[in-house]
Length: 228
Image (cartoon, one colour):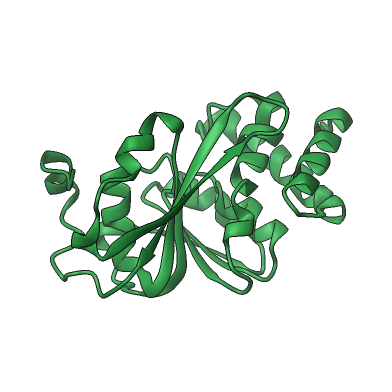
């Protein structure tokens, strides 16, 4: 196993600043990293260089973990090879995490790297019949914000939250009204990746009522006429 002690210790230290003690789980993260880049050599699962994995995959996935209530059922839409789903499930065994993606190679990889509290499903979010099943719905690099929220809202429980992983460039867009899909913006959290000047925004939208049955629309409809 190709272990980089310096990067891994930086990951442990960064996780501690986020309120997580993952020292005992470090071997699991090391194994996942090894498996990811071994598979990536033939499957093209990620464009992130291995030397940046601990920061841009692991730490980035955990930046908002404190916003996720204990014992939550969490859905990660468009998880790819498992971000943020896998790091969240590993670092937070109290969570029940489901990762969905439409690509078989992504879900196939996750199925080969199981965790007891992580389920991987190959499905398109707009076609999945799991209405109001999750306390928290999130996703990284899923789609433009309006499409991400339209995909997320129907799958979130009434009273639950959608936590989008976005960038400062979208600060004004985040404040747009999304009451048509029963989401109300509660707060926007700003987080900085430790050791960098990279800033992430995590808008938290509360689901106030049942989402109208016409949502989500087909992918083509959402792209052709987004909510905003």
